[in-house]
Length: 151
Image (cartoon, rainbow, N blue to C red; front, side):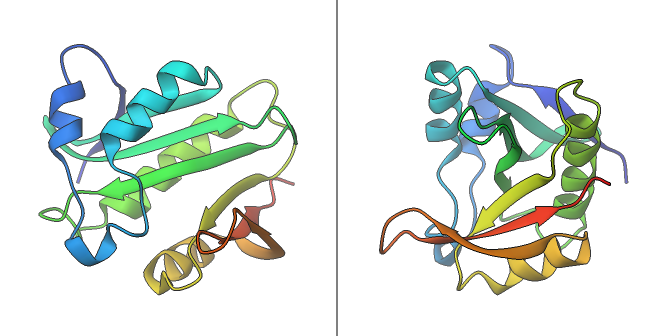
């Protein structure tokens, strides 16, 4: 399996927008069209398409939060037809390496997820993320914060 993270461009944005999760997962992740639009107005957000060979299979977005100075993995989604193949893990590992390579990345990498999203929690913990005890967002949209220590 070869996974690549590629920039969102005029050539692939429509393919990314058409990717979607299972209906029961929609409450866990914003649609890709929202994330791409968000990145156009919030310059700290970097959206990337997840490709398996030449096929788009998912989406990831990261950025450095101007308030806390930490890099966050803001979005991760794998298309419902492509789930269960290891693409999410592979995309996260590549995103982590991209973030680590940023010259201003000196703090831990953070990620957040809905408390009831057990699949995300298992995946993030298996990659070394640990809950911080913090929650972000407002009810009913509160999310658990986890961090990956870089040192």
